[in-house]
Image (cartoon, rainbow, N blue to C red; front, side):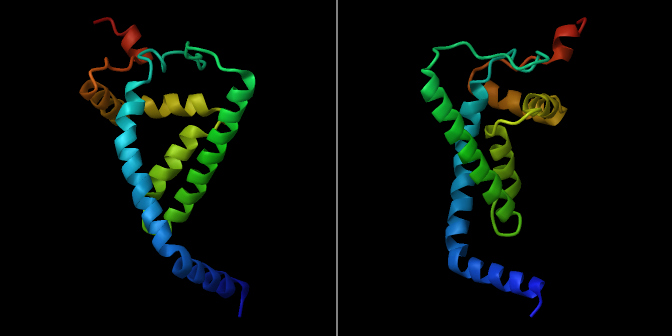
Length: 150
């Protein structure tokens, strides 16, 4: 038996053992994402994406140990979502959505540039602003909005 056949045999055995739980987890992540997304989008400050660099959101500052624990837990959760999203690309479930949420949670260089690039796609900005409107929030500003002579 070749290495490739052994890998496929192991993957099939894993799917038989954990397939139901992966499917349940996939559906749960999808539902949680659908429910939580409008709340998360509504909390984004209106001017969050107009700056060249990430601006820290003003608010109460936590103890540095608590901040570090939150960052570590957030990165662990994001890594798990990224990994499970990758697995879901080959199994039933919202793999791309799960991977996107994982990427949005994890801290990495260039993350703000990627977020700005994504949010400035017209369809994405329209969808996000529609979610904000349903939550009675003003639309997000973009650099184009600030320089529009209208």
